[in-house]
Length: 367
Image 1 (spheres, rainbow, N blue to C red):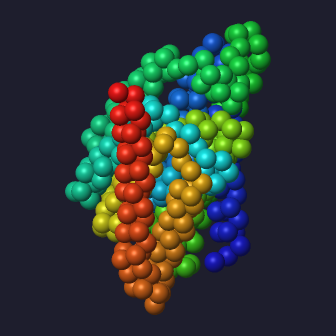
Image 2 (tube, rainbow, N blue to C red):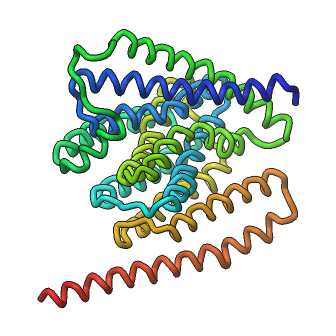
Image 3 (tube, helix red, strand yellow):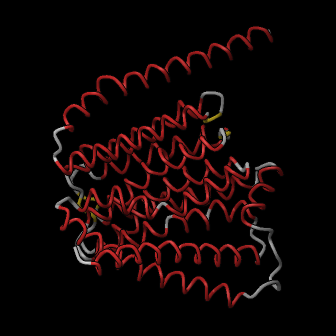
């Protein structure tokens, strides 16, 4: 592997993240200047913007016939978002989970994850599949905006602190913000081009698949905007944003990124057997795992964050062992399947039982 390939990959990643940041900043300021509430900006502009790197990588890799990178960046990002970002954020401070997330957004994340798997069972996410996914994200966006009107003043103020106060049309320079958006999009296009080309060369050099590169390095890199948003929000005590950003991003990744990529790609997105049999089911399992953890006391505790983080390390190690066909692969798989996963499942069941039992006792006392 030559130095130019490595520089191309790293510099492409830097351009990608910088472009997404400029795009979000410019779009948020314009939305605020025309009177859009900070909460709606957080639910729409920022949610779309933080998924912009995955979208740029997906479209670019689909056009150069590297579908494994397109799919891997989305699937890997969704796994990364829940296991690593929520894990780290919960370790910083226990994360309070809103009822709307438990009742609506997390079930929707699970539903669209399963839908993505069902649509890919024929080995391809076609243009028609992409249209279905993108129509759902439009409905979800409209629903989110309508729901935002019912939010309490406290939540509105929390989003205002994160994304800025709405200004009148006369404040700030609209032209400057438009220039930021244009420049941000240009950096996204250029950065994704360099990143994808570098990723292909890295895969060839190390003898591993583009899917593994997409699931690990590219997924982690394109998720950096979510890392920054959620961890900083957790440090500031803005816990709704920390959790909502991850769940919203995962929904947008599947519906918007996979949807748009499969629409504009010449032949849709082909789905490898490895992704269909292992990585997409892992993404679904991670989404489902959120529901009982979010349900227990409406809180993601530090120990639950540590479990998330531990599973991400285990998943990454599995990918590395499998790619290298390491002797430890069989033993590692057995330990995960026979011990770690059952122990985690039993622990969650006991925690949920204790939670439900406690609520029943409270109801009995009230009667």
